[in-house]
Image (cartoon, rainbow, N blue to C red; front, side, top):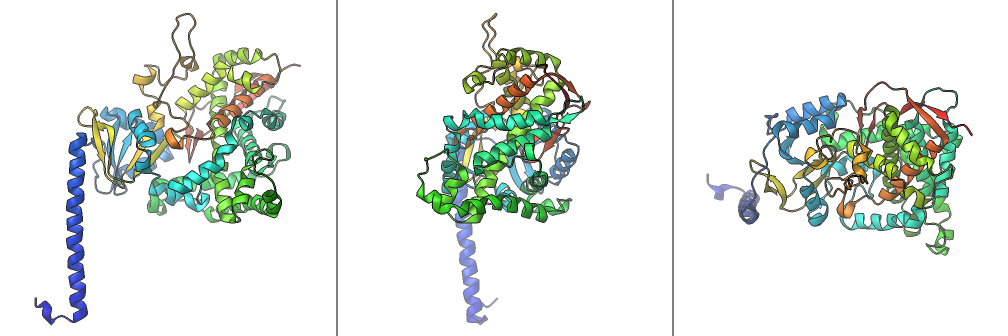
Length: 515
């Protein structure tokens, strides 16, 4: 072809295209050389592909299987069975055209969340899925924006705030009053989600929704739950979400949720001049007040509040639901717990006394082990990097992770590893956490193999708040009711959105203690 015969503009275009191709080839060569050098230096070997799936181009077989298992409420269980099937703790899979790694190796999680934290970011799918509802906040940002959100939130969780049990007591009293005394069935899950909504809004907004005492806000709770289901699906499947039925009320639900929080934002902005005139630490730290001192951007304030409200409401309520479902199924645990709570002699526990309730603490730890509230998580590599385990025939070699590749991990599976928790790892046994005074055997003191609240730089700031609220709620309910009877014949069944809770809630009959 005679390029000289082409128009001048066309020759320029062809020349630029040629230069671009040469640049891309050179860049690919240099990047490839650098990657090969890194792999040689670290001695990496590839992680095995999961043998149960054959489509390594689009991963449609994985997509179909996961959709089936989500529908069957066996998503978490089947993910663990894949590890067991291939007798590995790290594997490669192809998910909707993207190669990713799936692991339950504590050393890999330590590397991602602590040692090489800056090399990793939230996955693109997570941001794509979460932001339409939550905006930009602590669960949807990286880098300076995330640091800023975390710094603003940190004062909420100082010891003086967490130990303020008088604030909890008001809401617990409403919870106890809401439990029927006529031997009828109550789903404690519904009450727990109201309780945590009331306490979280007081903690964040400076005033409670009082849903336990005044009713109402059911519409918000339902819209918030449906919205979470939608964004959970969207974050898992990205654009493929359109291929299966989604929340038909998504737009209305999102608008309702945003309007609910905007009500508190507008109330806060109306008193901004007063807040600016006050010192930040003049009174108890209230998250919305600090936000309003910093900005008048309604969307920014709403987004920060929604991010934290999600954590404050759902995680603790899910933990309480799972614990009380188990208590209703296990009279032996109920008896031991009642004996320990009886040591309080009917007095409202102090923060220090709560910390001394060792069986109660073990009960919560064991629930978080077998039924972690956030059972699956993921990150995406910001640069070419490596992880210490998962490569080669026995999984002992480091693995290479290319920039942009996702790594997901199963907390649910890792918490069931028999090499860490023993042959009875599948059993609910709180005693494993307790020291045995007769034998001198120490209870569990796990490291990175136990991650109910994440780890490293992004470890959950509200961990102690959640455990304190769950401990106090459980202790006070035990003081008010001395007998429990399960009203649910079904086993624990996963209900997985952004968090995980028993599908059937905690349907029980409680008998009030004679006074």
